[in-house]
Length: 576
Image (cartoon, rainbow, N blue to C red; front, side, top):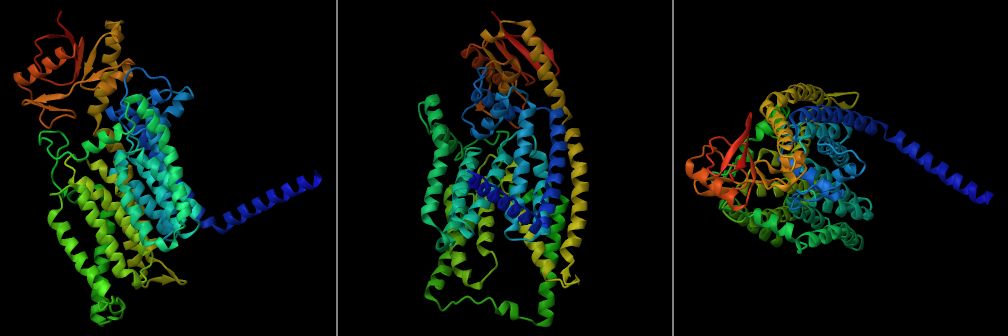
């Protein structure tokens, strides 16, 4: 027994010794990581404080209501067609006895910081400590990311799981194939956090196919099997709820191919250049500054080489065009590129996705013998970006926040550009290139100033939402006092999820009726005529609504009378 104890003690000592040596060896990397976590945590906390003051929005209430269901405390309303992971994670906090709207903000922020950590580690595979630190910080502080952060959407949470999935898939290919068990599981979690993450199958397949010679297929398929174990409880739950285990996926799939949505719909935008045109505002002053540096750097270096007539670098790019296979690749690639450009936005997005990733594979075949450093990772990140860029550009329902799904690859290529430019500018001190550190100091200063001004401005620009949220809470309290038996009444509202939460009962949502059309998510012009009012009235009568909590002005409901007006909120009661 004494010998056994001594052996265990020795193993424990060796483990601690290895851990200490590992920390000592990577102390610089760990220092940068700690700095990054500190920056990200402070920014996240300040952003959450602002959102707490603004209050939740309808999507956040859906996740909160779903979390109550998952925690076994449902109050009648839920939207279980939404991906389950984000709501399930919130439900874990609810099970501990803390039920508050603030949970959705903090869960959003917590998962975001985890994603920032993952991005730093993912960038470390290709870049040095300072480049990885700055790349992750850049992602953290993109204006659109700051805007979405802490609101209580599932977007950033899904990005975080995606980042960790790519990190472990790269490790599985290059270091230890056992990481496939983690990578595919994380991709499955990302999919169950946001269903359009199914598009990740394209960059994942691209990366695996171009690295097929390195793969351990036994562990790869085992990893896939492990990931499917995660979705089994979800499928069982959906079967119990809907009688069809894939119904929510079918519902999402049908909504993602909408092409005939009315232009009157609030989020309708058929402009395929939407994200390109808004790119400067999405990346902010720091991103614009980086793009300027990269563009001028490329031009300057090109001119220098041209003036020196130093063509060695270009002569080193030798593609064997005498190779029959390469000739065929180039012809097919050119043909696919023409089809891609001519048909972009005019055909089903899935065909465009397949076209692009076919081109990416052909491009790799043409250039793989050039020994481009981390070319496979470049293609993986580019594929990650394009998978979502293609879908969100073609899909007619657009929102700037969808850009956060593309933000990590954008940060990657910005750092790649800065790194390549700085490595070619010979300004050194003690054999260390000073360009990137100098640029980092300048850019971090810009980032801090930009972020410090943006966060308070978010609150200032959302004062109307602060006011409206207070009116919703106050009107809900008034309504509960007005009719203590309200839970047995049929209640409808323009903000069903919000009132369901505050009234703790099922408040059904009212669509928008305008010009003889029905809209589920609002319209651009909320000026209603009498014909529109009659449609609202008929809808409420048909559904036997006893009360209608309305936030739309100008309605004349002939079967309902106003019993309370509170700011933007009007409460109607059925005339009996």
